[in-house]
Image (cartoon, rainbow, N blue to C red; front, top):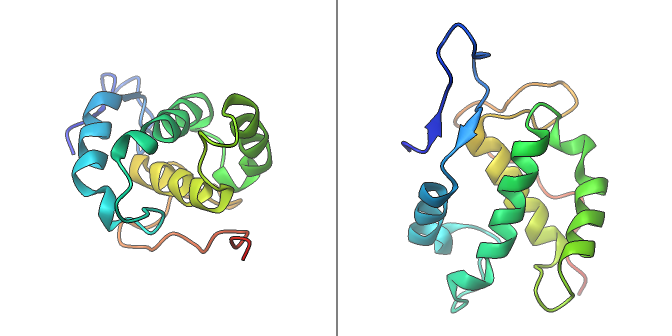
Length: 130
């Protein structure tokens, strides 16, 4: 990826991303966003960019906390920060958060472990309203 930078090895914790080049991350998302489950065909990348920024901001703030324990807090903050028309449905945003956490090697579950590199993210906790 090239967007993850670490402090000198003596200061870094193995497997933890400490600095993220968000611009490089957004460039990669822009290139392959249609391949992700939350993508709605024909939707411009600019529709997803604020939610991606929220996900990376959240990651940088909470990267040492398993995502599963943060979802309620992040959902509330997401709803407070964006009006209804500017945000993704929560089940899509949750999938996006899981992908960011997994991309960065941060823990997803209560076991405190990052997923295996080839592991698929777990299904969202909620399904979309139909």
